[in-house]
Image 1 (cartoon, rainbow, N blue to C red):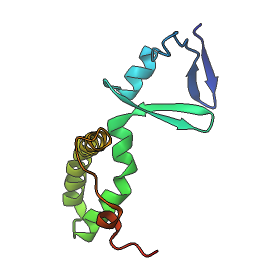
Image 2 (image 1 turned 120 degrees about the horizontal axis):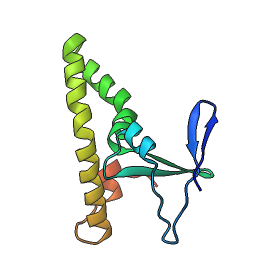
Image 3 (image 1 turned 135 degrees about the horizontal axis):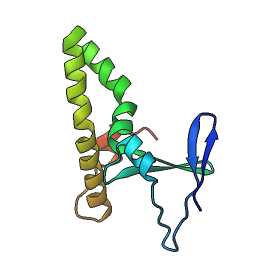
Image 4 (image 1 turned 30 degrees about the vertical axis):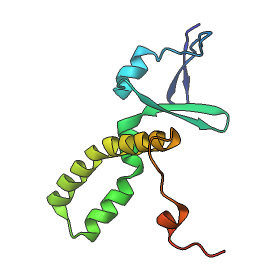
Amino acid sequence: MISYLENNQRKRKIISVSKKRQITIPQKFFEALDLGNEVECVLQEDSILIRPISVNMADEYSDFILSELVEQGYGGQELIIKFKEKRKKIKSALENLLKEADDIAAGKKKGATMEEVFGQVDE
């Protein structure tokens, strides 16, 4: 069952979910978002949001990156160049963090204690 509907200038398509809970992303959507082999899936209230990882993860950290670069004294064209360099590194940094978290959860690596993360905790 496939149909396109216009809703608040957003394209909408009804798709089927297989018995294995799989869906196929419509080709026009896939191409419009330039999706790769992985996407981020976010549960929001009564919805599932599927979005590109590289674009959105980088966008979520843009304010932090810009603030940090401005504090370091970058401006003008140099700020733009440094910002683009840092944005490109976000995906691999997040992948490394997720792998480390998986290793800790699997008992392959020791995680940090509360005191190591937050310092002395007052009770």
